[in-house]
Length: 94
Image 1 (cartoon, helix red, strand yellow):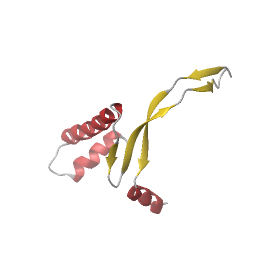
Image 2 (cartoon, rainbow, N blue to C red):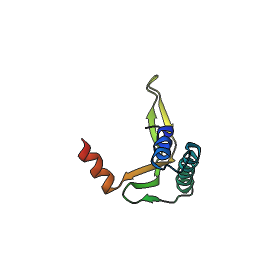
Image 3 (cartoon, rainbow, N blue to C red):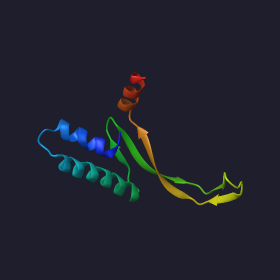
């Protein structure tokens, strides 16, 4: 599912809002989650899951094309942990 498909689903499900209003809602939610993670906060959506920012240590990587070793610096990356309800819904579908 793409962001535009999500906007369409929200606009169709909520008859009182337009596609543009649904797009503003989706963009606002994504921006709020991104801002919270950038500030080091944790975002928890009950029943869906939680987003956190995790620290990755520096490591020695390898360029697959040339085989040359490359140092990969430490960085902070987003991490998502699905909630129990989401895990069960996905598991029961398969």
